[in-house]
Image (cartoon, rainbow, N blue to C red; front, side, top):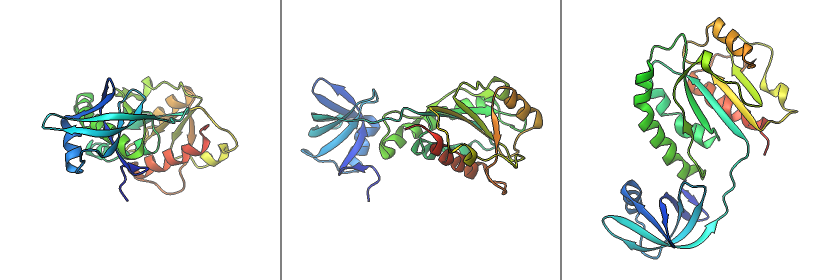
Length: 241
């Protein structure tokens, strides 16, 4: 099954010009790789909250043009997830989690520099173009209207607990689990996930003072990548539709 097809049509990222949809640069190349032909029907996300169905009427070296057939109904979740992720020493590990968090509905991804982080802000910022490109490409597969917003790095003391429900998954927490809150639902949730070295105790203290609740992901110590995906998947259970 083609993971980019929805109701039989491939989805691309493009722009709307009058009654037409235009693909160029990488999206034009992608269309050619996928052997899109004249008169074929495609979907185009114009990255302004709209998705259109179009019929291809022209393909050349500079662009693909499709005639708009209809505007599709786009249903975006009204709930939001902000993910604060402590940075691993190898930033390449983050490369592999951008697509999964997009598929799982994360709205904002905020890199966090903690006491056990050896990377510097400038190193993180160098990764932004790659991460933003991955976030953009992922929405074609998971059918989101907008990509995950990747924000500038912060330190733990600068994290803002502005969501309805603010949680930090802490390896030393033994009592409280997310299942204790399944009888509630929230419009917005902020989640803090530790890096390879976990959290320093004063970092947890700082987060608690900001209003974050410490929760456990279970008895086993999980790798960052596993903890992150497990946590976000669990958070989906307490979001309002």
